[in-house]
Length: 189
Image (cartoon, rainbow, N blue to C red; front, side, top):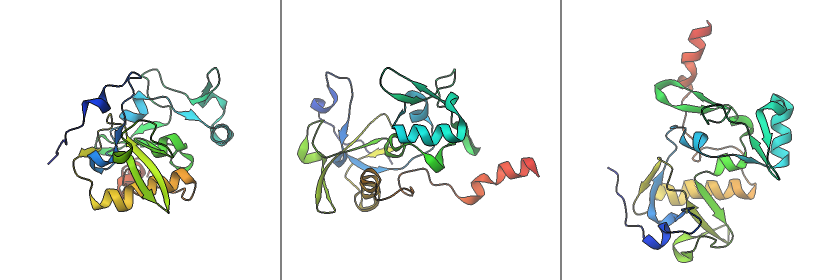
């Protein structure tokens, strides 16, 4: 059952039209492999990420803006590395070198309450204060009182990724069982 907790209109009415909600309104988050984030957003790359990607796939999979580097999009607007998996799920072809922006979405881990509502966004971890927001566009968000899993597993993993303490994702990506990939092997055997 999905419960939508009341979110104050002051959070939703932003001049920038960017809506970020403090983590305390989220019961649970789990990537459901819908692929919307890979179709609706531009992925900004750091120079190091750009170098890693272009070294393997070539410059043609990226594009340059005025002062930023991006992953290229297909004609339909989807990320060039997004591909269909079984059961209507979508998978990332860059999982092994996934950009930080992709690893963190839909969460924003900040050192200051950039989007307001500081007390609701505050999260203390590793003796530091962080301000955690989520983008409500994500379909993997379940609204309500924060769950134990969100507080003790999911948000800490996002913070560790932000701080560079962790590279591999477990709670911050779609769970994929080994049998999930067997459909491709059967095609080639």
